[in-house]
Length: 113
Image (cartoon, rainbow, N blue to C red; front, side, top):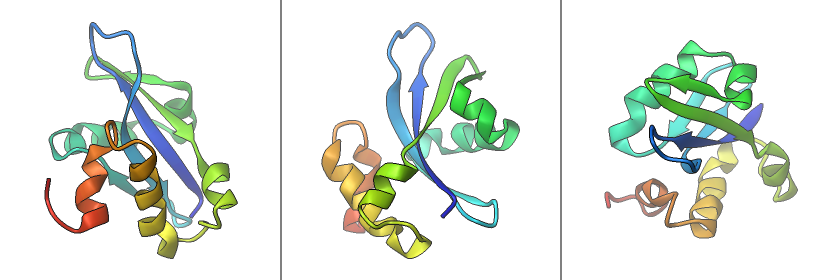
């Protein structure tokens, strides 16, 4: 894995960025996006439209502000540095913040919410 990001979004009229996705950037440049199904196409389009640097600095896409926070170092401290560790990493993130990362429940438990 090259990077692991937390995707935070500030919807129009809101004043708080909330975590709404997890992005795993692989060594080959491809990425995996974990987010609510209803937001998947919008987030994927934003990830494809902007550079990683732009996304880290924050962008506005379809009237919402989006920002990636690099959490790679935190994941590396737990020993999660390759794609085979993604399930353990997602389980950890879900347990840390089940309210905002509720969409990870289906990945962690293997069933829909």
